[in-house]
Image: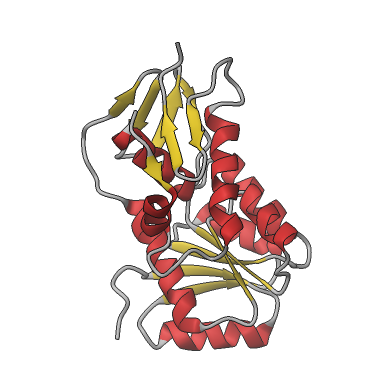
Length: 230
């Protein structure tokens, strides 16, 4: 069965056995995969071509996955990135998200879960196209480009942090619960308890840290909300 959402994927993975398993699974569903067995080639392909999503191994020759991911985000590439790695510690997970990855799956993995995660990322990235900008105080969101500015300054958001900010902005100044955020981001269940916290941390780095007064407020044991600086 052809996957409607996923049509073209970039796989950056130096383990040929793992790559072969992923290729067989997705190609059987009509998905086109491009392949790189090292970070430098993966970066070149990601820069030069458009993909629905990128599956990125963490430990790679020539350039590791964290560096590759960080470079793409710094250059403005917002293609959804799923980090696939044998390193599954809390620190490795948080570091992967901190460099701009949208999701994280530890080896060994279930191929159906991999597909579900990628499909959710792509849906989230594409969003619902609308010509109307969304405003809240100093904050302006453009759903067409899935970009945001505060005081006219662009915020470097990946697909996941943009989705969080859009939910907060749509509901502001009311509270968005943790459960609501998790349901929107991970319909099949949150990867682990630290993942949402890591994405909120990334969002704060862009939305609040460069400015004198924060907009993102944590409501203990409930969720988060946006407020207009006094």
